[in-house]
Image (tube, rainbow, N blue to C red; front, side, top):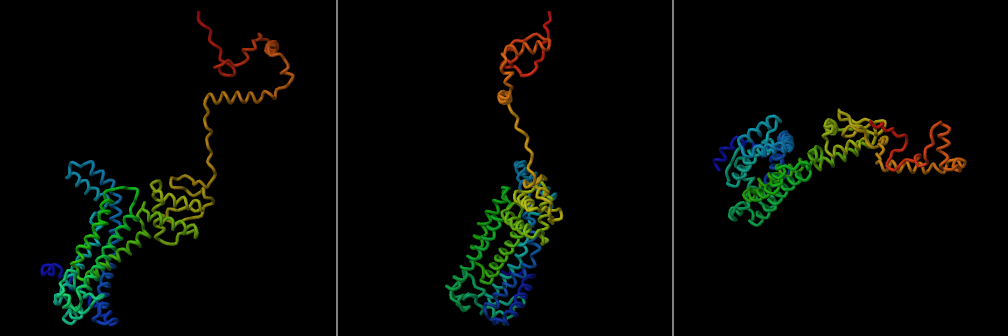
Amino acid sequence: MDTIASLFSFITTPVSWVIVQFHTVYGALFGPDTGWAWGLSIVSLVILIRICLIPLFVKQIKATRAMQTLQPEMKKIQERYKNDKQRQSEEMMKLYKDTGTNPLSSCLPILAQSPFFFALYHVLNSIASNDTIGVINENLLQSAQKAHIVGAPLAVKFTDSSSKVEALGASLTDVRVVTAVMIVLMSASQFFTQRQLMTKNVDTTVKTPFMQQQKMLMYIFPVMFAVFGINFPVGVLVYWLTTNVWTMGQQMYVIRNNPTPGSKAQAEYLERLTKHVTQSGKVSRRRDRNIIKAIVVKGRDRNEFERKFINGLGKAGLAAQSDGTVIKSESAAAAQAEDGAPTTTGAPKRQQPKRQTKAQRQSGSAKTAGEHEPHTSLSKSDQPEDTKPAAAAKKGGAKPAGGTRSKAQSGQRKGPQRPKSPSKK
């Protein structure tokens, strides 16, 4: 433990000072020796740390999305150089460099919290060991040892002996019940946070190994918290449960207002945005304008949810602009769909007539001729059939042709035929 104290001495004193400052405020409200005063001091420490880590959290979100986008390219590199690990690593580093992606960025919030976590662990362990640390003097040490959270002293662990627990004025049963409940809540909050990320904020159109890894972590992390949690003091369990609840709420906010493209959360967000824009006829929030701007820039590369959003605006007589705003169009047909074509609400598209086969054309011509036969004059139909060609030939000065030649022979085209060339003798 002395080794750990020496490693984290640079952060132990600031952490103890922050706890004491919060304890001064809460001690005036609830009493200096109560569990409320010391417990809320630890909760306030967590909130202060997480507020300072918000920029890293934003960077983590961007890094995670960038890694999701690169997964197809990474998979191609792995398959192409599966027998050459060195070349595979070189190509991976080149891909990260070209895209400006850092795989470690997704771990930044956890890494940044680690010094504070171990510093708080050492402070609480020193309180349990009756040792002063940082700015916690003898009087504050005795006050912290008297503090109980739902019957469990602040510095005891699930694995502590009954003699140590009784020395701090508590029963072993109360300590183990309280620590067990807190460990279960800590693991459950971690599982729900990871599950929320996997079910709502992951692009379901791309199946990559990264998704499988995240799915494994959804089950591994809660088990790790449960195993290590039995060795954490009650104060550290308060710290870790608070940070898990903060992460869960922070992630819910991000998923609702800035979802990953192609995810279920994006579909729900665009559905809400479509309803709001069609009712008000404008985009009021800057965040919504940025998302609409990104959708318009994509053009033909939009996913199905984004295409549905653009078409929904078109049906309402609105058109999204490149600056993220929407304008009213004269008709829904003026609003462009995702592929640049008018929406279906405009004038109907002219269809080309279906091409008929030769047999259909012949049968149609015969049918037309048959339909016109009843309309011929009775005087012409009274003439004998064999005298009609003769009369026509006599009038035109040509030889009369037989009645059978006036009709198109089977297999021949109707109408004037091309004369055959005379045979050469």
